[in-house]
Length: 181
Image (cartoon, rainbow, N blue to C red; front, side, top):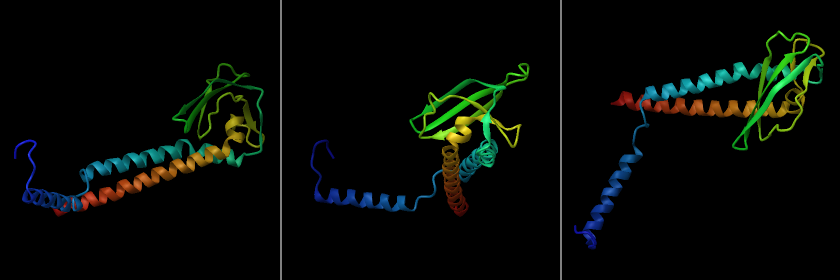
């Protein structure tokens, strides 16, 4: 057919028939990618979920257990505190807590994550629990933003579980279509 010329009615019918055949083939298309790719995606998400539980979960449980027992620790000093907000949604904060009484001791880095909160301009007051003298934290994260941190942990865990479940379903579908070949 020449460029710029109109198609006859039979040409349009053939075009529509070809499009219908392509649509029928796409409806029964196998899962995208190989099963190995989706297994790797699932394992990566499971590793992130494990890392979230191991690194962030114990601090939240400890802070809930010790809620209401935090007092300012005058023998500790907070330094190098910073919060980095990403896309106005999630904030990553870190601070180093150092002992004034034992200056040769290495400082402890304390990190926490919050959703929909900036954390900017807050005083970094080191606190120690009255029931567990070894437990130290920052008042802002241990008391003020404890529920925000808890909901952040729950939401992050929920999304990772959802993504892991989706990757597992796609893996299962790809494995079934791969075995049918």
